[in-house]
Length: 241
Picture 1 (cartoon, rainbow, N blue to C red):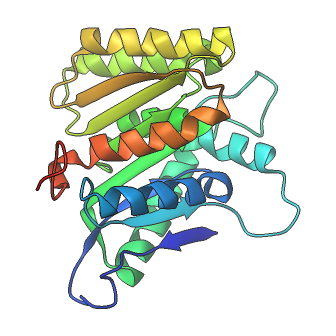
Picture 2 (cartoon, rainbow, N blue to C red):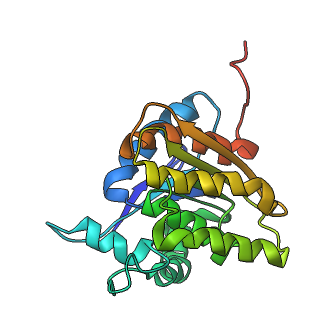
C-alpha cells in the first residue's frame, strides 16, 4: 500500500515532474514526514516534491513481522527465515513501484530519495551500497547498524575497497538516550564514514540530544530533508528580507 502526498502545484502544472521521497514504514512515518515537509516548503528550504509512504494492505497487520521480512538485508537471527529479504524489496521498488509512481504521479526518475528509521534506516544504507544508482539522497534515522553483528559496516568497507563512487547525499542520526549497544553501532558507522571516503558522497552525522529511539524521527527527518534536498532548495541560510 502506498501513501501519497502530492505537491501543491501538482494539479496546476500538468507537464511538470517532481522529485520523490520514499519513506519506509509509511503506516508510522508518512504523517511525520509530510508535516515536516509542509513546514520546510513554506520556509523555502526544500523544493516541492512528492512523498511516498511504503506500507501494506490489510487490517490488523503485524507490522513488526512484515517490516522484518523486507527491511533487513540479513537475517535478524540464524533461524529467522522471515527476515533478511531486503534485496527482494529493493527489486520490487525498482521494477514495480518506481514505474507506477513515475507514470501516475509524474515523479522524476533522476530525483529519487529514500528515508527510513531503525530497520528502515538500515535498509536505506543497504540500498545505497547495493544499488547506488537508484537514489540521490538517503536519510538513515537511528539505523539498526548492529543487525548481523554490524553487517552493514562490513558491506560499507567492501564497497569502499572497490573505489566506486556514490553520487548522493547521506544524513545519519542516532538518539542520545536510546539503547546503549544500539547507539554504539550507529556511532561506529558514523565514525567510519570519513575513513570510507566514498567518492562523490556528501554526508552529515547528527546526534539527537535527549531523545530515545522513536523520538528521534521528527528531528531526524526534518533536518535530513533539509540536507538531502539542499541542492534543489529555493533558498538556503537565514530568512531573507
